[in-house]
Image (cartoon, rainbow, N blue to C red; front, side, top):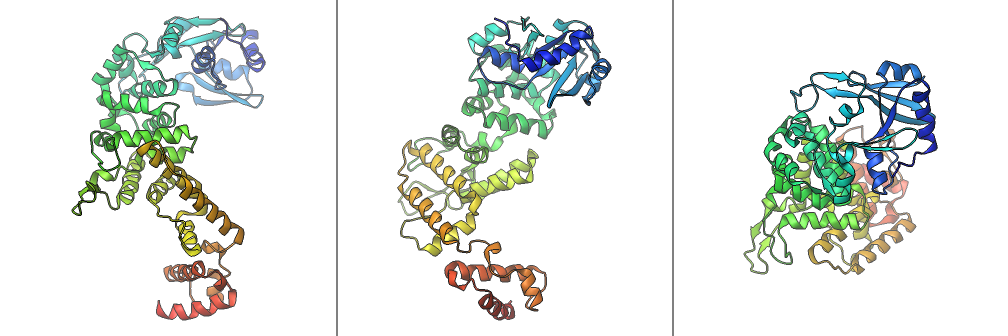
Length: 451
Protein backbone atom coordinates (compact mmCIF):
# COMPACT_ATOMS: atom_id res chain seq x y z
CA UNK A 1 0.00 0.00 0.00
CA UNK A 2 1.22 3.48 -0.87
CA UNK A 3 0.56 6.64 1.10
CA UNK A 4 -2.02 8.76 -0.69
CA UNK A 5 -0.11 12.03 -1.01
CA UNK A 6 -2.26 15.20 -0.99
CA UNK A 7 -1.59 17.62 -3.84
CA UNK A 8 -0.36 20.35 -1.47
CA UNK A 9 2.26 17.93 -0.08
CA UNK A 10 3.36 16.92 -3.59
CA UNK A 11 3.79 20.60 -4.41
CA UNK A 12 5.80 21.17 -1.21
CA UNK A 13 8.02 18.13 -1.90
CA UNK A 14 8.70 19.33 -5.45
CA UNK A 15 10.85 22.17 -4.09
CA UNK A 16 13.18 19.62 -2.45
CA UNK A 17 13.26 17.28 -5.45
CA UNK A 18 13.99 20.07 -7.93
CA UNK A 19 16.97 21.10 -5.79
CA UNK A 20 18.35 17.57 -5.69
CA UNK A 21 17.17 16.54 -2.21
CA UNK A 22 15.11 13.64 -0.90
CA UNK A 23 12.19 14.34 1.41
CA UNK A 24 9.89 12.01 3.32
CA UNK A 25 6.75 12.29 5.38
CA UNK A 26 7.41 10.67 8.73
CA UNK A 27 5.60 9.71 11.91
CA UNK A 28 1.97 10.33 12.78
CA UNK A 29 0.64 11.17 9.33
CA UNK A 30 1.87 7.86 7.88
CA UNK A 31 0.82 5.88 10.97
CA UNK A 32 -2.68 7.31 10.96
CA UNK A 33 -3.07 6.81 7.21
CA UNK A 34 -2.47 3.08 7.72
CA UNK A 35 -4.98 3.12 10.58
CA UNK A 36 -7.47 4.93 8.32
CA UNK A 37 -7.53 7.87 10.73
CA UNK A 38 -7.58 11.55 9.80
CA UNK A 39 -4.28 13.36 10.40
CA UNK A 40 -3.17 16.58 8.74
CA UNK A 41 -0.24 17.19 11.08
CA UNK A 42 2.62 16.70 8.64
CA UNK A 43 6.27 16.27 9.69
CA UNK A 44 9.06 15.88 7.17
CA UNK A 45 12.59 14.52 7.19
CA UNK A 46 15.16 15.25 4.49
CA UNK A 47 18.80 14.93 3.52
CA UNK A 48 18.84 18.72 2.99
CA UNK A 49 20.71 20.56 5.74
CA UNK A 50 18.89 23.33 7.65
CA UNK A 51 20.75 26.02 5.68
CA UNK A 52 19.66 24.32 2.45
CA UNK A 53 16.02 24.30 3.56
CA UNK A 54 16.27 28.01 4.39
CA UNK A 55 17.76 28.68 0.96
CA UNK A 56 15.01 26.76 -0.85
CA UNK A 57 12.12 28.45 0.96
CA UNK A 58 11.72 32.18 1.49
CA UNK A 59 9.82 32.04 4.78
CA UNK A 60 11.23 29.86 7.56
CA UNK A 61 11.48 29.85 11.35
CA UNK A 62 14.47 28.43 13.25
CA UNK A 63 12.35 26.37 15.66
CA UNK A 64 15.08 23.90 16.59
CA UNK A 65 17.86 24.59 14.18
CA UNK A 66 20.68 23.23 16.36
CA UNK A 67 18.88 19.88 16.26
CA UNK A 68 18.26 20.21 12.53
CA UNK A 69 14.65 21.42 12.62
CA UNK A 70 13.28 24.32 10.59
CA UNK A 71 9.62 25.30 10.26
CA UNK A 72 8.69 26.24 6.70
CA UNK A 73 5.78 28.60 6.04
CA UNK A 74 4.32 27.45 2.74
CA UNK A 75 1.07 28.64 1.15
CA UNK A 76 -0.75 29.24 4.41
CA UNK A 77 0.61 26.12 6.13
CA UNK A 78 3.52 25.55 8.50
CA UNK A 79 5.57 22.39 8.07
CA UNK A 80 8.29 21.12 10.41
CA UNK A 81 11.30 19.84 8.47
CA UNK A 82 14.17 17.99 10.16
CA UNK A 83 17.44 16.93 8.57
CA UNK A 84 18.37 13.22 8.73
CA UNK A 85 20.43 12.84 11.86
CA UNK A 86 21.87 10.40 14.37
CA UNK A 87 22.01 11.30 18.04
CA UNK A 88 24.95 11.20 20.42
CA UNK A 89 24.71 10.29 24.11
CA UNK A 90 21.90 11.65 26.29
CA UNK A 91 22.95 12.93 29.72
CA UNK A 92 19.76 14.73 30.77
CA UNK A 93 17.11 12.19 29.72
CA UNK A 94 15.89 14.72 27.19
CA UNK A 95 18.42 16.06 24.67
CA UNK A 96 21.41 14.40 22.99
CA UNK A 97 24.72 16.04 23.87
CA UNK A 98 25.63 15.98 20.19
CA UNK A 99 23.87 15.29 16.92
CA UNK A 100 25.34 14.35 13.59
CA UNK A 101 23.63 15.04 10.28
CA UNK A 102 23.58 12.04 7.99
CA UNK A 103 22.61 11.14 4.43
CA UNK A 104 20.94 7.94 5.63
CA UNK A 105 17.18 7.71 6.29
CA UNK A 106 17.74 4.43 8.14
CA UNK A 107 19.95 6.16 10.73
CA UNK A 108 17.30 8.82 11.21
CA UNK A 109 14.41 6.40 11.70
CA UNK A 110 16.15 4.21 14.25
CA UNK A 111 16.61 7.16 16.66
CA UNK A 112 12.82 7.52 16.98
CA UNK A 113 10.72 6.28 19.89
CA UNK A 114 8.27 3.56 18.77
CA UNK A 115 8.03 1.33 15.72
CA UNK A 116 4.63 2.73 14.75
CA UNK A 117 6.14 6.23 14.66
CA UNK A 118 9.15 5.21 12.55
CA UNK A 119 7.17 4.82 9.35
CA UNK A 120 8.07 7.07 6.44
CA UNK A 121 6.57 7.80 3.03
CA UNK A 122 8.82 8.89 0.18
CA UNK A 123 7.68 11.96 -1.72
CA UNK A 124 6.16 12.50 -4.12
CA UNK A 125 5.36 8.83 -4.88
CA UNK A 126 4.10 7.83 -1.39
CA UNK A 127 6.09 4.59 -1.14
CA UNK A 128 5.90 3.53 2.53
CA UNK A 129 9.22 2.66 4.17
CA UNK A 130 9.02 0.40 7.22
CA UNK A 131 12.40 -0.58 8.64
CA UNK A 132 11.22 -1.56 12.14
CA UNK A 133 8.08 -3.64 11.51
CA UNK A 134 5.82 -0.75 12.40
CA UNK A 135 3.07 -2.00 10.09
CA UNK A 136 3.10 -5.38 11.82
CA UNK A 137 2.78 -3.68 15.23
CA UNK A 138 -0.09 -1.55 13.93
CA UNK A 139 -1.91 -4.72 12.89
CA UNK A 140 -1.19 -6.33 16.28
CA UNK A 141 -2.26 -3.18 18.11
CA UNK A 142 0.91 -2.82 20.20
CA UNK A 143 3.26 -0.03 21.26
CA UNK A 144 6.86 -1.26 20.99
CA UNK A 145 10.06 0.71 21.47
CA UNK A 146 12.60 0.66 18.65
CA UNK A 147 15.55 -1.55 19.53
CA UNK A 148 16.45 -1.58 23.21
CA UNK A 149 13.56 -0.04 25.18
CA UNK A 150 15.73 0.93 28.15
CA UNK A 151 18.06 2.83 25.84
CA UNK A 152 15.13 4.65 24.22
CA UNK A 153 13.77 5.70 27.63
CA UNK A 154 17.18 6.71 28.93
CA UNK A 155 17.51 9.00 25.90
CA UNK A 156 14.25 10.79 26.69
CA UNK A 157 12.35 9.77 29.81
CA UNK A 158 9.18 11.44 28.53
CA UNK A 159 8.90 8.59 26.03
CA UNK A 160 7.58 6.43 28.87
CA UNK A 161 4.60 8.73 29.27
CA UNK A 162 4.26 8.98 25.49
CA UNK A 163 3.91 5.19 25.35
CA UNK A 164 0.96 5.43 27.73
CA UNK A 165 -0.51 8.33 25.76
CA UNK A 166 -0.32 6.45 22.46
CA UNK A 167 -1.82 3.41 24.17
CA UNK A 168 -4.78 5.57 25.23
CA UNK A 169 -5.07 7.36 21.91
CA UNK A 170 -5.03 4.19 19.81
CA UNK A 171 -6.35 1.66 22.38
CA UNK A 172 -3.13 -0.33 21.85
CA UNK A 173 -1.38 -2.62 24.32
CA UNK A 174 2.17 -1.78 25.39
CA UNK A 175 4.45 -4.66 24.39
CA UNK A 176 5.83 -6.60 27.39
CA UNK A 177 9.54 -5.68 27.08
CA UNK A 178 8.65 -2.03 26.54
CA UNK A 179 6.36 -2.05 29.59
CA UNK A 180 9.01 -3.78 31.72
CA UNK A 181 11.50 -1.09 30.72
CA UNK A 182 9.05 1.60 31.89
CA UNK A 183 8.74 -0.12 35.26
CA UNK A 184 12.52 -0.25 35.58
CA UNK A 185 13.19 3.30 34.32
CA UNK A 186 10.20 5.09 35.88
CA UNK A 187 12.24 7.23 38.29
CA UNK A 188 13.89 8.96 35.32
CA UNK A 189 10.60 10.81 34.76
CA UNK A 190 11.65 13.07 37.65
CA UNK A 191 14.25 14.61 35.30
CA UNK A 192 11.55 15.79 32.87
CA UNK A 193 10.15 19.31 33.15
CA UNK A 194 6.65 19.79 34.54
CA UNK A 195 5.54 21.51 31.33
CA UNK A 196 6.45 18.50 29.15
CA UNK A 197 4.83 16.07 31.58
CA UNK A 198 1.65 18.16 31.70
CA UNK A 199 1.36 18.21 27.90
CA UNK A 200 1.57 14.41 27.59
CA UNK A 201 -0.52 13.73 30.70
CA UNK A 202 -3.40 15.98 29.68
CA UNK A 203 -3.31 14.56 26.14
CA UNK A 204 -3.68 11.11 27.70
CA UNK A 205 -6.57 12.24 29.94
CA UNK A 206 -8.34 13.81 26.95
CA UNK A 207 -7.71 10.84 24.63
CA UNK A 208 -10.20 8.30 23.27
CA UNK A 209 -9.41 5.70 25.94
CA UNK A 210 -7.99 7.52 28.99
CA UNK A 211 -8.75 4.80 31.52
CA UNK A 212 -6.50 2.37 29.63
CA UNK A 213 -3.53 4.73 29.87
CA UNK A 214 -4.21 5.71 33.48
CA UNK A 215 -4.49 2.10 34.62
CA UNK A 216 -1.20 1.25 32.90
CA UNK A 217 0.31 4.35 34.51
CA UNK A 218 -0.70 3.00 37.90
CA UNK A 219 0.59 -0.51 37.19
CA UNK A 220 4.00 0.64 35.93
CA UNK A 221 4.54 3.00 38.87
CA UNK A 222 4.54 6.31 36.99
CA UNK A 223 1.27 7.39 38.61
CA UNK A 224 2.82 7.26 42.08
CA UNK A 225 5.39 9.81 40.86
CA UNK A 226 3.28 12.02 38.58
CA UNK A 227 -0.18 11.83 40.21
CA UNK A 228 0.30 10.45 43.73
CA UNK A 229 -3.12 11.83 44.69
CA UNK A 230 -4.91 9.61 42.15
CA UNK A 231 -2.65 6.68 43.01
CA UNK A 232 -3.69 6.97 46.68
CA UNK A 233 -7.35 6.61 45.65
CA UNK A 234 -6.75 2.98 44.61
CA UNK A 235 -8.54 0.69 47.06
CA UNK A 236 -10.02 3.62 49.04
CA UNK A 237 -13.53 2.58 50.08
CA UNK A 238 -16.46 4.97 49.63
CA UNK A 239 -19.31 2.86 50.95
CA UNK A 240 -22.98 3.69 50.53
CA UNK A 241 -24.19 3.72 46.93
CA UNK A 242 -20.63 3.29 45.67
CA UNK A 243 -19.84 -0.26 44.61
CA UNK A 244 -16.34 0.77 43.53
CA UNK A 245 -13.34 2.28 45.27
CA UNK A 246 -12.53 5.97 44.78
CA UNK A 247 -9.94 5.30 42.07
CA UNK A 248 -12.40 3.34 39.95
CA UNK A 249 -15.12 5.94 40.51
CA UNK A 250 -12.83 8.73 39.28
CA UNK A 251 -11.89 6.78 36.15
CA UNK A 252 -15.53 5.86 35.49
CA UNK A 253 -16.56 9.50 35.80
CA UNK A 254 -13.85 10.46 33.31
CA UNK A 255 -15.07 7.73 30.97
CA UNK A 256 -18.64 9.01 31.08
CA UNK A 257 -17.42 12.55 30.42
CA UNK A 258 -15.65 11.22 27.31
CA UNK A 259 -18.60 9.09 26.17
CA UNK A 260 -20.97 12.04 26.61
CA UNK A 261 -18.70 14.28 24.54
CA UNK A 262 -18.20 16.77 27.36
CA UNK A 263 -15.62 19.55 27.25
CA UNK A 264 -11.95 19.14 28.11
CA UNK A 265 -12.56 21.15 31.30
CA UNK A 266 -15.31 18.73 32.39
CA UNK A 267 -13.12 15.73 31.59
CA UNK A 268 -10.26 17.09 33.69
CA UNK A 269 -12.66 17.94 36.51
CA UNK A 270 -14.14 14.43 36.29
CA UNK A 271 -10.80 12.81 37.11
CA UNK A 272 -10.24 14.97 40.20
CA UNK A 273 -13.77 15.87 41.36
CA UNK A 274 -13.82 13.58 44.42
CA UNK A 275 -10.11 13.40 45.25
CA UNK A 276 -10.79 15.37 48.45
CA UNK A 277 -12.65 12.37 49.86
CA UNK A 278 -9.26 10.92 50.80
CA UNK A 279 -8.93 13.49 53.58
CA UNK A 280 -12.58 14.16 54.47
CA UNK A 281 -13.87 10.63 55.09
CA UNK A 282 -15.40 10.20 58.54
CA UNK A 283 -17.36 7.36 60.07
CA UNK A 284 -21.03 8.33 60.20
CA UNK A 285 -21.97 8.36 63.87
CA UNK A 286 -25.68 8.59 63.05
CA UNK A 287 -25.58 5.12 61.54
CA UNK A 288 -27.49 6.24 58.44
CA UNK A 289 -24.53 5.50 56.21
CA UNK A 290 -21.03 4.09 56.46
CA UNK A 291 -19.05 7.30 55.85
CA UNK A 292 -19.52 11.02 55.42
CA UNK A 293 -17.40 13.28 53.20
CA UNK A 294 -18.54 16.75 54.19
CA UNK A 295 -16.81 19.52 52.27
CA UNK A 296 -15.01 17.10 49.97
CA UNK A 297 -15.76 19.25 46.92
CA UNK A 298 -13.87 22.19 48.45
CA UNK A 299 -10.93 19.97 49.38
CA UNK A 300 -10.98 18.38 45.92
CA UNK A 301 -10.76 21.80 44.27
CA UNK A 302 -7.84 22.74 46.52
CA UNK A 303 -6.00 19.52 45.69
CA UNK A 304 -6.54 20.04 41.96
CA UNK A 305 -5.19 23.59 42.26
CA UNK A 306 -2.07 22.21 43.93
CA UNK A 307 -1.63 19.61 41.17
CA UNK A 308 -2.22 22.25 38.48
CA UNK A 309 0.45 24.51 39.97
CA UNK A 310 2.86 21.59 40.20
CA UNK A 311 2.27 20.82 36.51
CA UNK A 312 2.41 24.52 35.60
CA UNK A 313 -0.97 24.65 33.87
CA UNK A 314 -2.35 27.99 32.75
CA UNK A 315 -4.19 30.12 35.31
CA UNK A 316 -7.33 29.94 33.17
CA UNK A 317 -7.30 26.13 33.09
CA UNK A 318 -6.57 25.85 36.81
CA UNK A 319 -9.31 28.29 37.83
CA UNK A 320 -11.94 26.91 35.47
CA UNK A 321 -11.48 23.25 36.41
CA UNK A 322 -11.24 23.94 40.14
CA UNK A 323 -14.47 25.98 39.93
CA UNK A 324 -16.30 23.09 38.26
CA UNK A 325 -15.04 20.73 40.97
CA UNK A 326 -16.03 23.14 43.75
CA UNK A 327 -19.56 23.49 42.34
CA UNK A 328 -20.31 19.86 41.45
CA UNK A 329 -22.21 19.14 44.69
CA UNK A 330 -24.74 21.93 44.10
CA UNK A 331 -28.15 21.46 45.70
CA UNK A 332 -31.37 21.90 43.71
CA UNK A 333 -35.02 20.91 44.03
CA UNK A 334 -37.92 21.87 41.73
CA UNK A 335 -39.46 23.50 44.82
CA UNK A 336 -36.67 26.11 44.91
CA UNK A 337 -37.77 29.74 44.61
CA UNK A 338 -36.80 31.84 41.61
CA UNK A 339 -34.43 33.76 43.89
CA UNK A 340 -32.73 30.49 44.86
CA UNK A 341 -32.22 29.67 41.18
CA UNK A 342 -30.72 33.12 40.62
CA UNK A 343 -28.39 32.62 43.60
CA UNK A 344 -27.18 29.36 42.09
CA UNK A 345 -26.53 30.99 38.72
CA UNK A 346 -24.62 33.79 40.44
CA UNK A 347 -22.44 31.35 42.39
CA UNK A 348 -21.82 29.13 39.36
CA UNK A 349 -21.36 31.86 36.76
CA UNK A 350 -23.73 31.77 33.80
CA UNK A 351 -21.01 30.60 31.40
CA UNK A 352 -20.21 27.59 33.64
CA UNK A 353 -23.73 26.24 34.20
CA UNK A 354 -23.78 23.72 31.37
CA UNK A 355 -20.40 22.23 32.32
CA UNK A 356 -21.28 22.03 36.03
CA UNK A 357 -24.44 20.12 35.14
CA UNK A 358 -22.45 17.91 32.75
CA UNK A 359 -20.02 17.03 35.55
CA UNK A 360 -22.89 16.26 37.92
CA UNK A 361 -24.40 13.95 35.30
CA UNK A 362 -21.11 12.11 34.69
CA UNK A 363 -20.62 11.69 38.45
CA UNK A 364 -24.10 10.23 38.90
CA UNK A 365 -23.70 7.86 35.95
CA UNK A 366 -20.37 6.63 37.34
CA UNK A 367 -22.09 5.66 40.59
CA UNK A 368 -25.02 3.70 39.18
CA UNK A 369 -24.81 3.65 35.39
CA UNK A 370 -28.27 5.18 35.34
CA UNK A 371 -29.65 8.49 36.54
CA UNK A 372 -32.97 10.31 36.73
CA UNK A 373 -32.29 13.56 34.89
CA UNK A 374 -35.70 15.16 35.52
CA UNK A 375 -34.37 17.46 38.24
CA UNK A 376 -31.48 18.57 36.02
CA UNK A 377 -33.88 19.26 33.13
CA UNK A 378 -36.06 21.23 35.56
CA UNK A 379 -33.05 23.30 36.66
CA UNK A 380 -32.04 24.03 33.06
CA UNK A 381 -35.60 25.12 32.24
CA UNK A 382 -35.72 27.39 35.30
CA UNK A 383 -32.41 29.00 34.32
CA UNK A 384 -33.69 29.62 30.78
CA UNK A 385 -36.78 31.29 32.26
CA UNK A 386 -34.56 33.59 34.31
CA UNK A 387 -32.51 34.36 31.20
CA UNK A 388 -35.67 35.41 29.38
CA UNK A 389 -36.68 37.71 32.25
CA UNK A 390 -33.27 39.40 31.95
CA UNK A 391 -32.99 39.71 35.73
CA UNK A 392 -29.72 40.77 37.33
CA UNK A 393 -27.39 37.89 38.09
CA UNK A 394 -23.98 39.54 38.26
CA UNK A 395 -22.51 42.94 39.14
CA UNK A 396 -22.47 44.02 35.51
CA UNK A 397 -26.28 43.67 35.49
CA UNK A 398 -26.79 46.26 38.24
CA UNK A 399 -28.17 49.65 37.21
CA UNK A 400 -25.27 51.34 39.02
CA UNK A 401 -21.55 50.67 39.17
CA UNK A 402 -18.44 51.82 40.98
CA UNK A 403 -18.23 55.01 38.96
CA UNK A 404 -21.73 55.98 40.16
CA UNK A 405 -20.73 55.42 43.78
CA UNK A 406 -17.68 57.66 43.34
CA UNK A 407 -19.57 60.44 41.55
CA UNK A 408 -22.25 60.46 44.26
CA UNK A 409 -19.56 60.49 46.98
CA UNK A 410 -20.87 57.24 48.46
CA UNK A 411 -17.61 55.26 48.23
CA UNK A 412 -14.07 55.49 46.91
CA UNK A 413 -12.29 52.71 44.96
CA UNK A 414 -11.58 50.10 47.65
CA UNK A 415 -12.53 46.71 48.99
CA UNK A 416 -15.41 48.52 50.72
CA UNK A 417 -16.83 49.53 47.34
CA UNK A 418 -16.70 45.92 46.17
CA UNK A 419 -18.52 44.70 49.29
CA UNK A 420 -21.13 47.42 48.87
CA UNK A 421 -21.91 46.41 45.29
CA UNK A 422 -22.12 42.75 46.32
CA UNK A 423 -24.63 43.65 49.06
CA UNK A 424 -26.75 45.53 46.53
CA UNK A 425 -26.63 42.56 44.17
CA UNK A 426 -27.79 40.29 47.03
CA UNK A 427 -30.89 42.44 47.43
CA UNK A 428 -31.60 42.62 43.70
CA UNK A 429 -31.29 38.85 43.32
CA UNK A 430 -33.91 38.44 46.06
CA UNK A 431 -36.15 41.10 44.52
CA UNK A 432 -35.42 42.04 40.88
CA UNK A 433 -37.67 45.12 41.15
CA UNK A 434 -34.98 46.73 43.31
CA UNK A 435 -32.66 46.96 40.30
CA UNK A 436 -33.55 50.63 39.96
CA UNK A 437 -30.88 53.32 39.76
CA UNK A 438 -32.52 55.74 42.22
CA UNK A 439 -33.27 53.00 44.74
CA UNK A 440 -29.78 51.52 44.52
CA UNK A 441 -28.05 54.87 45.07
CA UNK A 442 -30.27 55.59 48.05
CA UNK A 443 -29.76 52.11 49.49
CA UNK A 444 -26.00 52.32 48.90
CA UNK A 445 -25.82 55.49 51.00
CA UNK A 446 -27.50 53.70 53.91
CA UNK A 447 -25.39 50.56 53.63
CA UNK A 448 -22.15 52.52 53.28
CA UNK A 449 -22.63 54.04 56.73
CA UNK A 450 -22.62 50.56 58.28
CA UNK A 451 -19.48 49.32 56.48
